[in-house]
Length: 290
Image (cartoon, rainbow, N blue to C red; front, side, top):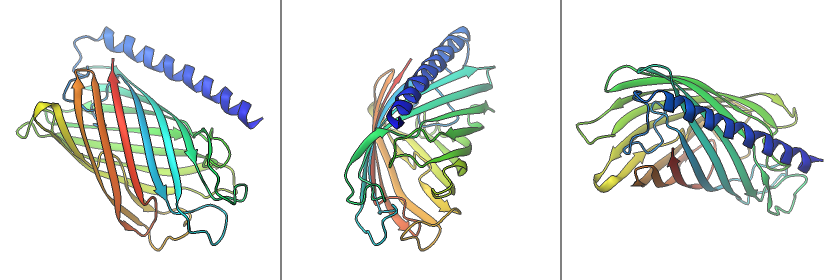
């Protein structure tokens, strides 16, 4: 029954994302004079400069054991492939709506009461959708805010079991004197659970990214903190937690291979893990703009 439900959710979500992306393309095409069309120097990480794109992302990370089996110290490995569709609707030269949907497929060896030996399990993960309103103030400044919803669509031993809301906000300052497309950006969001399985851990943590993107010669780029990987936990503690702060070193390097294709690799290693989110993390991405 659970498998049938997950498959049903998968096809429903896929159809929704396809419709979302198609609608965004039609809207963007209708506004050909808009400044929100994709640019070759935009690697897809700038929250304030949305694009129409399809992304395939692979995430590999090891985390401290945080299942329901007491006394376990073995790390848990997660290998996740995420399909992402982004769409942008240009309202005016200054205003746009950014739409996003993620569909993850997960392989993981969690330690839980149902899986006490930590065997690998696989299946659909928790899907999410996001909408944000973005404003371009001038050639340097832009800002926006939005909301992401995460749904507990994942398979057993993979899902968080919680409905979650993530308010998100960001502001960007362009640095054209460094190179075209370089910028500094402050991005934050708050991940909070509000419904779902009452036996699962409640989620409540602040996530930050002091992002710095530097575009290099020959279409290469280097980005510091491309994601909101700095965490401050205000929710239920997890095994091994000694404080609230998780602070990693988070670096991404990549290249715009073609005008509409970008490839990147991100590496994250914690420096402070009072709140132990992961031990090691890599993310590879391929973006295809349309």
